[in-house]
Length: 489
Image (cartoon, rainbow, N blue to C red):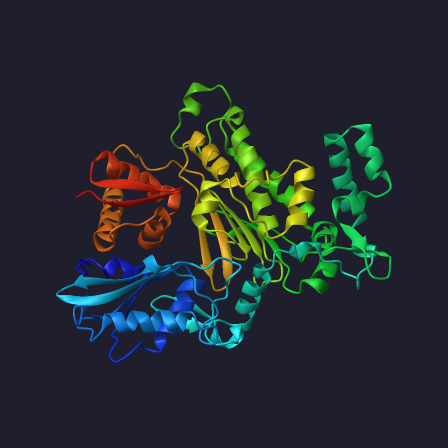
């Protein structure tokens, strides 16, 4: 039996769509199906309406079984909808308020299935979820999802209209020196001496038999004006703001006093941020300083984990970005936070990215170039490592979020103490209550579903679920590698 008394939390988190079905399925059901599948998933209810008090109430359905049968028939018709991403367990008939209603749980579609669209044209039939409504995707949004469907590395393409003259010699030299220092073996040095750029994937032979830059080579070592010929909206932007929000320093790829390449941008920003953290750090070994609550970091000797985590965060940003997207890459350094935002959506579930161990890199060749100089693990362990480094400093847990229009991923690294988890603050109580309300309405759910409903990261949601388990309020059940959570009977 489904209780709708506390369903307001769904509506506030874009997780539910109620439909009153009479005499057949409403046409808008397929727009909602497409929107949920292309966004973050959601719950579709047939036989539910919103009452005058803004709460959902059930209404009689003439024949729920017939509606379910019609739904399955249409969702399996490729002329009606492009993909069926549901299992039998995702569509159920349940009782609520004396009525039988249809509950359809729609997950987010995988990148190989997105965009999920109505009819046979993805450009006219693809939808996203925005607030409480569905809207038709723009051509750029559709093209972005279509690019991500392929398993061919986007950055391995040979750019035959470019010559190697578009690559910055100084940038290449700096990379090569770093590579030689890290790989001093004679055999390695001989292998790259004559074929350095082809060896690392920066150039490749075109149909004319000549060497041309790859997309990765152009991005890594190219001059900004040449990069923009291939990637018109290419923009790297690093900003430093003071406590009042005023811009005090900026580095942008549009300026003419440096190459504007990814390689140079990485090191300029990395050293700039690290220097500011070290300057803010108290002198190592000073007891009063090491225990100061106002200090953003404990001491210089404690920064080794932060150095590694910062490098991982910047590398992840650069190798996962969609450089053909309309929005640029932005890194903003404020006194108490670092906010890293790159264009493009997640190619795996955000919960999988947060947990580590799984990776689906958008720019494989760029990732290899960075890994050759020991930047970026490339093993799907970056986010957990960043969490560990921040935990060692006693800083608030980093947050990882995704927005869809425009598609952007944002990692927020706060440089201040986190809340005390041993005491239930009003915020913690509210978050626990939100989880309990969700599990009251939904019999059982995975961490990713709960996190999406209550507006927390999966890792933070996991912390609250562990606390609720310790308080003997909820229980967890494992099925294979997945765990679901429900209220204790």
